[in-house]
Length: 553
Image (cartoon, rainbow, N blue to C red; front, side):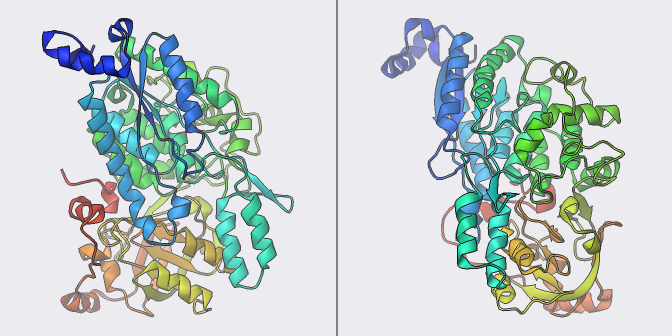
């Protein structure tokens, strides 16, 4: 056992004394030591229930003959961090989580790991760590929130942000907004739509690193506790069979995950996280891979904010297993691959079926013939840009209009609430990329404000920052290279005509090359001052969005 390095032999007598201090018995010293990475905290609604998940995992590990040992991982609530300096600290935690988990796992020589994440950067951070550490590992998330209900309609967090925009436009009263406040987030769990947290938890299941139901069983459902116990038992089986993350996270598994991504219409943030996970597994994935698979994959599911359904509806309709069955039928999912159950995907999904064809559609009735994400290229984005195409209104798939240029998210929001943005505009928010932010802030507030103002059908927004999975509309992010690195988005001037064609995957500013070259001669990228903290170190190490914003090797 790996843990013998800290438990066996005369040289480890001091180590054993410390295990004695922990209360280990002689019998426990002979058993595999399983690290349970707990992301429990009392500030993230999606993590407030993880203590129960962790306790259930511990029972499962112990029942299967292992010794469970809990240690923590941090997590940021993107909703609470949104719209202020706090959002600079969201994406940066992904790599911090991976690094700290690596340190804990290898310093203490755990034989196996169970990861207990739930929200946003916590999930990809732990997937990166799993690939890097490469000991038998199972994931079990905390599960999605139930949908809220306001005035007879299902609601999720994005509708709360949109309500603020509606209030600014005089379409809602303060009492209306208060009703949304009280009802849109009714339970613990990751926010109820296909936002980043639920996107990544679903893709964890599609990759084979999470058990069936990992992405969709609601946080308040007792099935989540049963799943956690099973995860604890399964990791012991993986240990016995010596099945490790890099045996599961292969090129074919990543291709599966991308097909699922497109079929579900996941968050644009998956275009950051999947390449980063691939990188840790010694593999490569780029924007070309994303676009190729998007072109061949129909969007079968449309959840909030793009549609009316939520994660609980997907669970009741058959869950990810039913979606996999559907994709397999079209030759778009390889079910021969090994998973963390110790069985193949085909074995896992035996008996799965679509229980509600309105929630999980087939190829003939699909929401679109291609996937939920698209990558655009052009003279604004030579290295690519990402849009959640499945959440764009048909009339905005092709759009041309004058640039309204802002160097900060806050200035853009002020302009919108003051009525300075008009139909036809293309909002440009720059210097919000990985280096420029630094931290590549999510911009749910601007996109939600546009929707609340009723401008999402006439105004596009482009940025070198990124978006929440809750964003909808013609919101194009991850523009690479970013302005702070000298990217051409930094050359755009107020009033320049920007042409967007999502059908043909293009984004261009209609300014001739000679003029752009003259602008570049005078161009000095803005580099915001940052304190001597983590953001300063992050800026020095982080790469471009099109590479997954991973650190330089």
